[in-house]
Length: 468
Image (cartoon, rainbow, N blue to C red; front, side, top):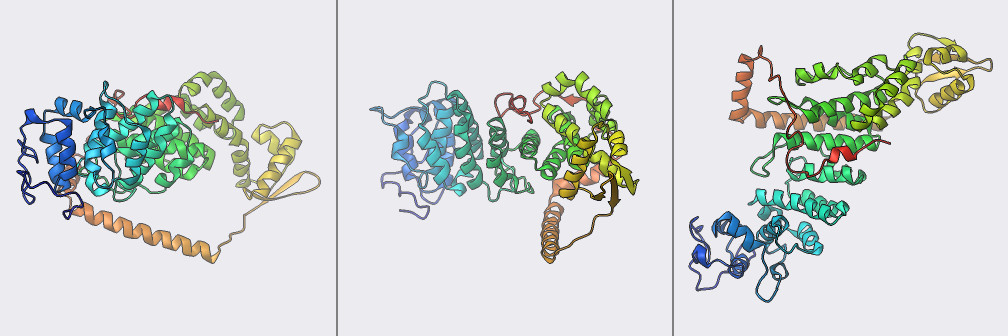
């Protein structure tokens, strides 16, 4: 055994264990025309290091020939995966699995091979071939879809995502594939451990990530969190998606902006000013939509809100936003009452009902009592139906203060680390200087409708999502 933990090559091997093989040859010294699946498997089990093996697998034959060989079966119908294990042969299994999942005429691997690999592989070895990791992730999802059970992909994708990057704060191509799979299958809670780690690092040597991968991950994450009614976290992810700078606005960013506005209405009762990084064309287009009219009438003009929903219901259904619209509409009376507390000290139930658009006094009473019980407002209801509003008492526990201070310290340390990393990035400094010179210029006027979700997650997954 050598230091890498793999078997030492046989004495007849023409390969030096210290110097990488040239790109035109392979570890066993055979020519490209002599390469077979048997020789590939032999090399996988005898390679001196992952670097050597990765170079061999990339150069042993032309791309088309290599993929056909890797997706084939050994003589005697023996599956090469039965001769390998993920701990000792991570790179070899990665190449074989990704090839077989993407070759049409190949025998697809059994699910236990996929699950075993994603559970036991060595991440340091897999990082020698980030493109094959992307192929594996997309192949797992496509295979599960072909089997008619997309839920099968969740467990292996989760294991792959947790193990592959150094931390879950490193964005990879696996992130959007996993999140969109969770959204389509409505397994939202499975995504929470991943979404709990904000993205702080993008390393192109770790994963062949694209701009749309970033948008899709945060958009899908926002959908998952909104479905779980985790409104603050959903708001943050939708805002990251909608305001991520790019050369042109993307259709997925417009979808994120619509959901962002609705989440803010549900959670805050009003929308927040748009981020300064948001593409200006997004806001111009948004103002021409019924969402803007709904937002402007919220929450006091309840009859107008109902009219907008009735007239534009099909649009909201097509956008998969009718659930959010309905929740915002249901929350409108509560936000209208909270607005009244900033203006009046006392009001009768009938006056409150008139202001918020509820004619039934008993319904208003029930709503007020519910808001008092849930601490949404601080008020007292007298026997004659008069509601007296007061400022809510401020309560601070020592544990709350300690928690906030600890979070602030963590964020400060994180920001300092990121700032130092950016200061060492020559490309960032060049762009920062150039952006000052071009501050007066605007971004491109066109929206990039094509490829808004990237090429990786197959199927129109966003259309399969609605909020009940």
